[in-house]
Length: 367
Image (cartoon, rainbow, N blue to C red; front, side, top):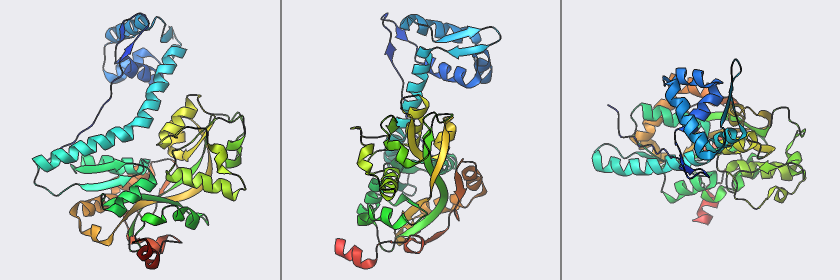
């Protein structure tokens, strides 16, 4: 039997210069036209009325006072600059806000679960948003598992586990000599006896526009004055990795600063580059491929989960491990560009996996 599941879907409300409202569903159809190439194919794919959808687009154009779609017989449908602007605004919004909306949905879901169900308390997960985590989340929801997951940056996820407000947290670290140095940024929150749950190995690198018009080949190129770079947020593991890479290349990472807070997801970074608002970003390969960008590999890293030994006794954690070891999960993870399995679902002491894991003496000194 399916368990309680909450999802939050935002709705745009746009009033054009004419004073008329733009039908909210128009964004859905602009995205569909971009995907399928013309309105007829989009309607056929979704089983919708061509006449009704065309009227909706016409009403939106009337409200905005400008065309959104140019349609030519035999040439399909092409979005106008106004239509493109609306599509990219929606894609950036989804990439930026979906993890936060999912976190709020999981929060409400957990509260309702406690009221409506006598089953085990949901597993409290604090994780940086990533595609492997998305896969795991989707499979657990489909299996009827109640979730209490919070998307945050890597440092905050580990801090939540350290403070006891989470049962398990995500951790990603480079597979290179940089590992110990990057680990030191999070050492204050790490328990000496924590366990590591293997999940995936993934590639981080440069995301650039098709054709790489600015000839961006390495992280040092991100500091060139003509390159518009969109950064990840401070505290994210990806931002820490990039700054470490720059220092090892002899460059001051302060040159990346542009006065902004940075983006919270790989997809948000990719969306900014793909929409032309930036020339380059740094993130995982899957985001680059999904937004039609070129990807230049820079660093391989492990992405997995950490938890205290007692956490293995949690029935929900055992179900999560069972899911990780399933054929369905492995097949879904293998399908992600730039990802490969890393003994998926296997558990061992974190200190046996990562060089520089804080010893007991360091933990006692922090206590």
